[in-house]
Length: 287
Image 1: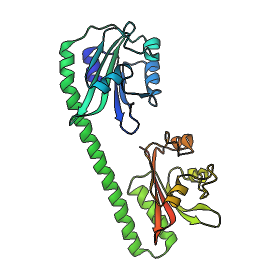
Image 2: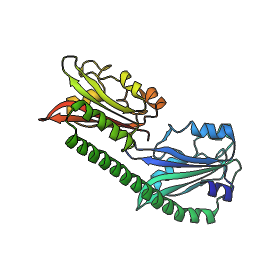
Image 3: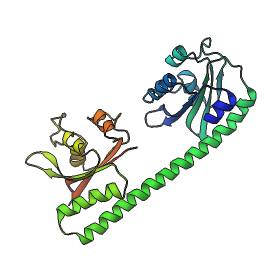
Image 4: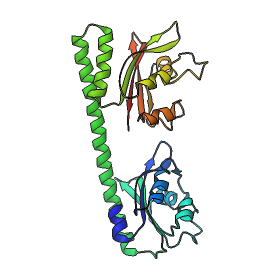
């Protein structure tokens, strides 16, 4: 983005990735000219979403074709935004990012001056959009492989620990330690089911944000939604609970607290004995 902006004279470049589950575009990366207010504004818009068919970016995502607006202030197809009003962005150019025929996002460029369509750039971006898509797809594949390797390392380490450790408390502590130090998770904890207290009782933990455990709703009573969280759901449903973005998942009660501790995603896995959930293993990552 920086190369395109500096070479072609654009003030701002943004990449919006397609969130297929939400059916929306989300800001993933950006570059802008050195200007603190503009940078802070764009950084603060990461939680915003773009729906299919809405605005230039939504239209490009829906139609899979690049669009150019010479002057967004006079273009009836462009939805006026704080970006155009506050920072006087006029020229705009958006093109799809595609991998293996699948739309994975869009790249959007904005300029403070009105700009006539550049057929040379439009033609080049059709090719570059596909190349960028292939690159991003390879990156995602590499990240997926790295995650699988990390999980395999954790499982392998825990299996080795089971063989050599006979004390349950030591086994739980070592499992959490392996998850954090070998698996790269930011926080790991294990809790046992306490039927009398009707809650999950943490018994071992490792990593940053240990105080976060004390704040969690760990109840097992579904009639008490203020105390019945993902750990309770994992026990009652005997199924893994996954939150890919804790700050946006409505099932996660402590959004702000999680973000403050660098916790962005989680997996809570039920520990089953004879098909009965006797505890949970909770893993938290910073991405």
